[in-house]
Image (spheres, helix red, strand yellow):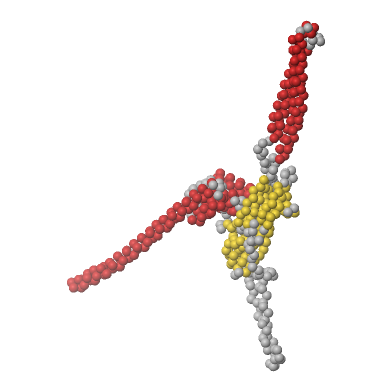
Amino acid sequence: MAHIPVSMKRMGLFVLVLSVLSAAPSIAAAQKKGGKKGAAKTEAKDEAAAKDDAGKDAARELYKKGVASFKAQEFTKALDAFLNSYDTYAHFLTLKNIANCYEQLFDVPKAVEYYTRFLDEGGAEVKTEDRAELNAKLLKMSDKVGVLTVICEEEGDLIIDGKVAGAVPGTLRLYFFPGTHNVVLKSGGKIIFNEDVKLPGGSSEKVVIAAKKVEPPPPPPPAEVKPATKPAEGEGTVKKPAEAAPPKAAGGDEEVVEDEGLATKGKLHVYSSVEGSAITINGKAIGKAPWEDELKVGHYEVSVSAPDHPSWKKTIEVVGAKTTSIDVDLTATKKKAAPWWTITLSAGVVCAGLWAGFGAWGLQTKNDAKSIDPATHEDCAADQACIDRYNGLVDDAKTRFLVADVTGPLALVFAGATAALYVLVKKEKKEPKAEVKVTSLGPFLSPGGSGGGLALGGSF
């Protein structure tokens, strides 16, 4: 075994101590750095939680304002409050109340959209009975709504009926009233797709706008080379080439045109409680309910009729860039405050009672007079008092018979009047009514392709 000098042992111990001391600051720095990162993560987490709580509080305040406005029947204010509440903090219960507001404003497509979103986003949290009730409600409303799915591969703005529906490329699920809708894709300030889509009630249609490959224009033919000659007088001026024709729409032969606003046009929707009711506008038959179309701004005489029902007619104003909805109830009745036939009936009953009473009284008086008639009773013929009583009874009998003779025919007259008035009032009670609402014109865009709501309520 080799012998190690003591000086060498001391040197090794010194190196070991020096290494430990030099590593200590690095370890401490690493520990300090790790501690800072952990503290930063905890602080960021706390800040996010505080921000989330603040968003919930703000959303609750907006939600309460929406409930108060709804109860006051200020449905437009309620709608704005609920939409802002959902944008601040997305809670599925808010979607239910948004749908309620749209339904009160006769915006059926929007109502269907948000009712469906409520069911989708609520998921298992929606009660089974609420889901069943809402599905039944959506089924009843389905004939007034069509769903349009647009799949677009081009980049630009998708415009439906003159209103921007959303940015593409992508897939958009849109809710509309039944009818024909104009689908336009605008890119780079130009319209590159323009098509009318017929959307019946209760249907779901799809429009695919595929990317179009634009072929480069062919190169111009080489210019013909001519020998140089001296230009004649008047020549030598270079003529400007003719201006190029406007570019064509990609994939079509129509010229590119800018989209026109709807300030001079509006939409008219007509619904009826009797399916298939005939609709006329300004005396011209235009279709059957439910019906919708775009009309120029102005006043129109709209008539809705159905067999075995009284017709409804009214002059309606179509407002520019607005949707006018008419919901006609042909089965409605107008209640009369004072049915006149009850008055004539009462008078007839009184007259009949007088006729019967005075008639019976007159017969009784006549019999009393007959029992003491001086012509047949000798004892009365010699008694002046008996004669006077006889004469009085005869006069009373004549008066009572006279009252009976007058009230009897009157009872018959009032009976006839009662029957006639009853029939007339019964006919007059059937009077159709309609609710007319004017709302903003535009597509019903569903960011998530769904929507929902049952009745006002709930909290979060």
